[in-house]
Length: 110
Length: 113
Image 1: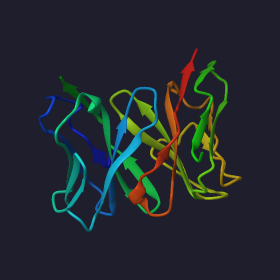
Image 2: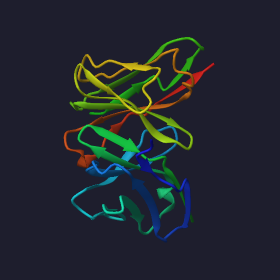
Image 3: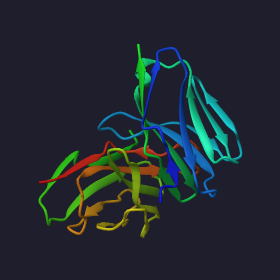
């Protein structure tokens, strides 16, 4: 039972444009949501997070939006840069558990 | 420097053998996790531990075992009962309060030969 879903396995955008990565979850007990970036053969690195009591969190070029009623969150990257090309994992957590989506491979073309 | 270390980076196992993957952290984190990554499936939770001498099964615990005798260490044993062990294994630890995100090791790629 996959509690966190990223339905787009890949996304390709032009440099300078916006990248929007989506994530859906099923467990209403999740109270924290995170995005991780991963390069091949490396561990994921933390990118940005949002508490369930907020609907938006911004950090530089990265913004995460949370829609609790829809159980949906998204990561916006503006402007996208070639160095952003990686696999992005959405994660959802309770105080003692953390579950991940399958990841979306983002390719930013120069 | 504080961090989380997994070893070895590459591991080859013969069918029927048990192997143990090491995960050590010096971040003083209570929570530690083991995930498995397969192509197209993201990170799936194998086991997690919130405190020394306690651990819980994740989504895919069958064929795996763990121990948590020390706060710093959370080794994962892949037993012969695990039918498809070839995968990339990631260990993570979490500070209290999740807003800073988990710290991950560099991973161990296990291949059955």
